Image 1 (spheres, rainbow, N blue to C red):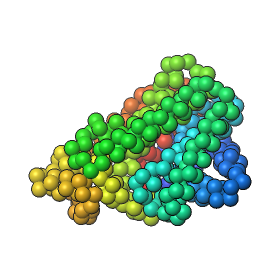
Image 2: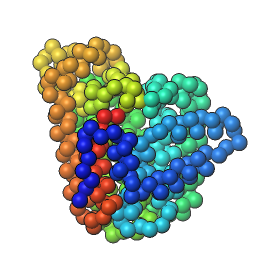
Image 3: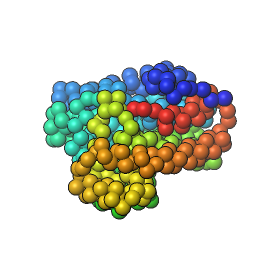
Length: 333
């Protein structure tokens, strides 16, 4: 049985409930991250600590650990690998913020806004290379391959996104080509890292990888929906930021396809220019049913994830993984 939750339940309380079976593991992840940030370069340590202590969801470590436990793994290497993947993820966020000229992340000024682009890029490099040092120390070639492949695909995703910027003809296929590299591939890497140390059968590895890809896609769709329904202080970023960067996210793609010609022209011009009447465009996105269509598309990913998880034996960890799917699209931040 999965945990029954209410959409109105406090998100932090809900996350604690979902992760209760691995609470001790998640504390070990945080302890490991703090230990791995040690540097005799004071500014390096200062910025690294600022970024990693910002209160992120730790989705990738949680996913890796839950999958490990669902596959029957009893050891503690999963905690170390959870810290490894979180440092890599944080490094990519720092680089993305520089490329996107973002000023807010997780409700606080970004590192580039506070210390400048140069410091942010270099500290991002420090976190990136530290995660690879940790990966090597783990001494598992399958783990190394999963994380190295994901790092390479993350870079591809960023370049594809740059190519797509300010192009109002981007369609659903091109959108998924980006998010599968920028978001879902690191979820998949966590699943394959978990499968590697759990030494599970190949059928189960492919099942958890499929689940993770579906979760990652649904997570990004939900994130894009929040750009039109969220509150900046709650979601920790500026609303309308994607539009300002000329990104054709799924809500805009569907709104363009569903809207009357004059509304479609307004969307296309705003994407080309990187600015426009965000309130009016939000009204168009909501009025034409684009957000409902996004939710339907996200639900298809959730069903894909549920089907994949059915290949794992029942457990409290499997239940948390199932509930994590629903939480991903219900969250409001």
